[in-house]
Image (spheres, rainbow, N blue to C red):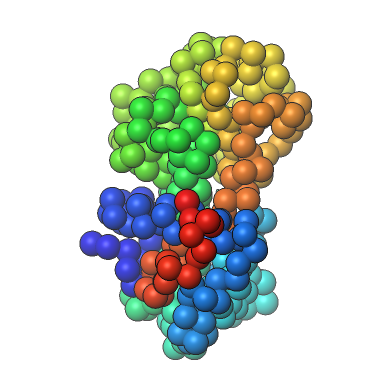
Length: 320
Ligand code: NCD
């Protein structure tokens, strides 16, 4: 089933056509922004203004929440930030489902939701966009990551993506494994045994014991944050020893593909997962990912809200 008018909970909800649509329009929005062209002529703002998107963030966020908000503004869609949940009726014991039903009744066209639980399916009728569910999935981030790889490397098919770090607790890596495989990339990982994933769909994914070996194999390195907030006592991770074995620094990049791509969804902890010097390397695209976020999220919103777009409004020299 297509994403048109539907929820985006998992990468499994996306058809090939949805992915191509999102990448195509993200490129279009990026070109428009680079040429300082307002989307007013591309999107029917009169139609957009009938839409209201609620951003419901029950967990901390910088990039995801703000880039969704920017995307709504650029599309002319009304946006309501609903992130001060300590001051909402949830704090009075109301369930998340009842809250969603209330937002639906208030006229939500879509709800962008980040929360601690693993899976949330609602009967409220409004499409829900997963902006990070516990350690389950984060499909919009994976779309940003794959699109960044495509933009820099020219393709995703055949790329060798090494995921380094806390894969066990990462919703980003779960979505990335599914999406990158759909797009024909090869995925391997490198992480301490206590942080290796247990889900069935990770079975058979090669795990490099040695970071340098993995880096020599890869065309893309994707570092992840250590999700200490999700660790229980059984993880027993020493940050000092993690740094010794898994931090990606300038020394490691010496053995990396000369046109490779280094990414990290952020937030990143410099000195633990990556060294600050990697930002000076031309293969580091961590900031490109952040820049790409509003374009991908605007394209996701146009699909979910079923907005009509007029491609011919972009000047020919601005088209990609
Ligand atoms: C990630 C998230 O929140 O899942 N960040 C993001 O959305 N850009 C990764 C993380 O928290 O480590």
